[in-house]
Image 1 (tube, rainbow, N blue to C red):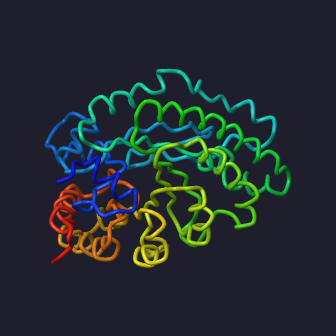
Image 2 (cartoon, rainbow, N blue to C red):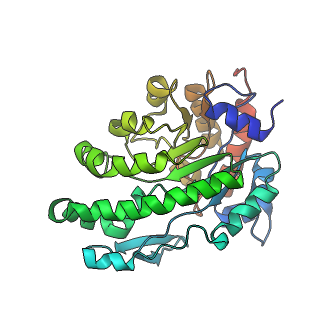
Length: 327
């Protein structure tokens, strides 16, 4: 029987472990407390112990230079980016990427990880650029000052390269980039603009990653998948239900990349435990055969999820995910 780290690394390599790994990147603190019946926040290790999750995750994100508000769900939401003109570049004050304080929480996760696979959540620089410029600011700059887009991406990329190198040296098993770049209908920009503006920056950062890594983007990124896979990614997350089809992605790309996803966040929030049990089984039926698959929510476990649905998800993964798959 494999331990969690062995199970995750096996699936990331495209092989078939002893069971489908549960690879959830983020569980909201309030949901974790509710499941544990505790009034104290749980550590990554405690969350994984409780849910039989196979990973522990530390977040080391680049900052956004933007206004934000706190929503009714307690989450922070960006409202408007600050970087609209060249004069605004002075607002981009990135922290020292070699400051040990930046990695304080990451070190704690590693120290407590036990047999779990340890992931560091990062951003390659595309999502921070979109947030700091705003989609409207990015769109105007493509016509008015395209070099401004290149400059913002360059600053984020150079910072992230150093951070990646430090995280690798610390001993993380894999990196997990969260760079949303699509609506439900398709990418934020045309493929031509993606190739000219975004892809060079992504390539520069990807070349700095010397361990397995996972790429995340919500929305429909089917038109960009060949370009993204050429970056050398090992895992693709979250295959958002609706915009993307799990079975189609598995069929077309399952030989090239580990598929990760895609239990509906909407159903985790508004469905029933019985629905979650059915969805977990369907996900494993579609993407589990042959390995190269890890199950997770289709984004993260948010504060508005129903704790009983999250509990059912964890239980159903244990029930249906054992290889050889049979029901």
